[in-house]
Image (cartoon, rainbow, N blue to C red; front, side, top):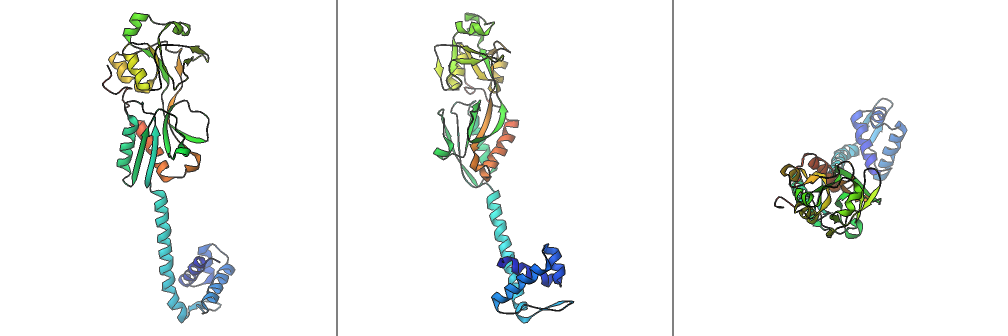
Length: 302
């Protein structure tokens, strides 16, 4: 018998006026109620109720005990509510990591607005282009782009961001416009080393080997070099609305070269019940649905 259950049973029997009525309200057998209250009386060494076939009467000891039971049960309920509130309210420090070169710093913008929404949270944001082991390095969530590798991490997709082949009009005027994937072998290709090195994927399912003078794990560097006419590049379409509108970049081999990609929030599987992680995932979904992402390289790329 739980002492709390026995005290609640005592209060409910008094309020209902009968064991049968209290048993119906508590959804337990009448015999169970009788056993609980008998055990409570044995523990106290005092009789709390006088039972007759038609009614119950509270003894002097019961009359003293009853209001204190109510106070204790109310305090326990408030304590339970407080714990539930702590579990439901995001608090503490949320450690986030993501790529350093990512669309003009959208991760920072996401984190700042998240802090404004949740005043009881702190954010520790670390941007790096190296792969971060979340659990080993103590991070709660990572922003990742591209095609996710199989892992023990859980992921929520924020937005699709397929990589498409682009070049500047300056480069195409100088080197010519490729009309087939095979011709890419004759062109300067700017290789982002985080997306398959020198192998680019065809929509048909095949692959083509490319090469060029510039290779970098920094997507902003690839973007800037492409805008300045150094070669062709596979870049995430999500961030290219502005250079397309300005005419600084154009699509090449549309429908031939494309790498399915996306932006994801990933987190350890054993942390899926964390209120702060759940809050960040839900906020991220909302934020990306309305975000106008800046172009790669920021707004000052020439």
